[in-house]
Length: 196
Image (cartoon, rainbow, N blue to C red; front, side, top):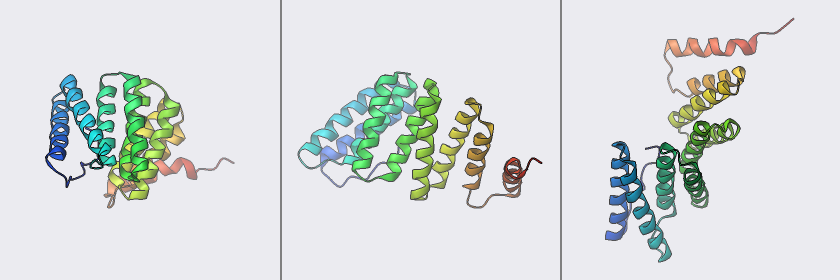
């Protein structure tokens, strides 16, 4: 599932119940049992929010569950629910000052908009995702956001922007091999050519 790593919980058995429901939801998702995944994730979310009301919950954990709900709804092409849950997750990650979680959710929003056909919003969210991942130093996920952005730019018939995004994705590799270095140079070639 395209979700940030779970935040370890230090609280009581109720916290264990949230983690257990979250794990079950992710397991159902991995097995393409989407309705079961939604049931577990909604229960986990409700339990997490109930714990927050009494001062024991985690804003980041609630955001993480909302993000997962958005991903499942995206797979089911239930766009309204997907957008609602992903936007809720993003806002909660912002409140929790969790840039990594926000970056992941922005990437999921961008992917949802891409599949839905809203390429302008897809590009904007994928670029924001890549920018946030850059700030937190997560090159692997930054590269994934940039590769997805490259695909969107191609679909928008913007080949130079697609090349730029793909080249930036390749440059995220910490120690690129010779083939990747050559590919980066080839992709940069159109920007070095000057017309008369």
